[in-house]
Image 1 (tube, one colour):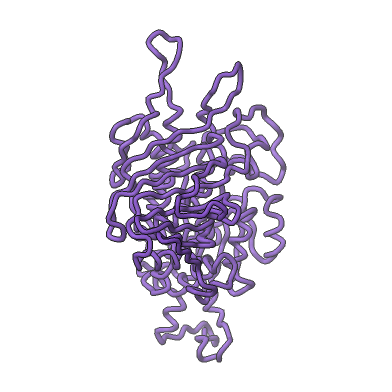
Image 2 (cartoon, helix red, strand yellow):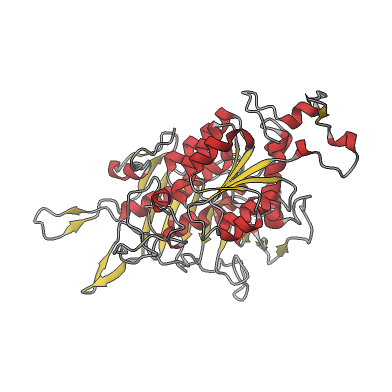
Length: 490
């Protein structure tokens, strides 16, 4: 498709569909409808690049490529051994380690970019792509910190690009079913929401890894560290185990919050929270003394967020998040032998209204209602299905590629379930919980020098519009982090 990056965002496909024909020598690019039903013209294919193409990045690339419906023209990963399987699946895509070099060399040939790296690199890569007029699909959480999420949200509007965050449950029929149930008033007004996950399933709440080890030949460690503070290579960081360290990841809340909090955020029309408070599991590391490790995420946490009333839900909402295997107890309306959330109760959401309880599992799965009077309501098979529903991950990627081809102002773009206009504020809310968790570990020596006080262990007041904690300034250091070296969010 090789979109030309005009300010108005007009793609080659739109230009052709408007009735114009482009001639190069004796060749014409001919619209699909002229060639016949079922034929896909080359101009209808997106040229996609993937950045971070191992692990979850592999499925993101393959789902967007959609069995060859689109062109995969470039693949970028700092670890070529880890990404080997994706490289082999797309042998014609040019390989890179540095996304900046890829954009320099192939910028004119790329229409859209998937970003599935470690959390701390999402923002700089997505921003660089959008500034070049490229549409972006970015894995959850959208960013590592609140400031980055706000900047990407504003940039998507400025550069008029099509965006989607990788919380694929946003496109599931279960989410649509819950929105419909709530609009019908079946559970009434909601004042309490419970959300929980069994994560972490990676090392978390452990002492900081030490020791310098040889860097594998296939890995560019400097690029992997990227915007983060420098650490020497250690397999305790990469691959995957980075999630439990604030330098690179966002812990259990960052990993699963954008999936699970998405349901009440969408159903109740929530915006920025106004208050946050937390408690965390601590680690006994020596002499039976509980220590909070500031560099790492805790083994478990409980976070309470308060939201103002909305048009959809005319009441303040208290949302309680649990991780590390902690979960809420059964509400009175839910029978003792019924699971809550997922079928094994390991992850889930409870929205507790004055007429009943609505629940679901991860990605909006198995939605149910338990109403006063003893009635139980479950989702009817095949209700709210769309043309994308049979596709992997509810067609979350393919809906995005279709919207990329239709353009920024199209109905397809407006129909996307997790554009940055939605997923940016959702991500800010999720990371607001992490701001409280990180502040919980801030400590100051006592006057006698024999101990410490922990001033961050309080309820924090949050000014969402201005991205600021108003009653504990020291916590604001976590709103926007400092990048290493020459890295910048332009």
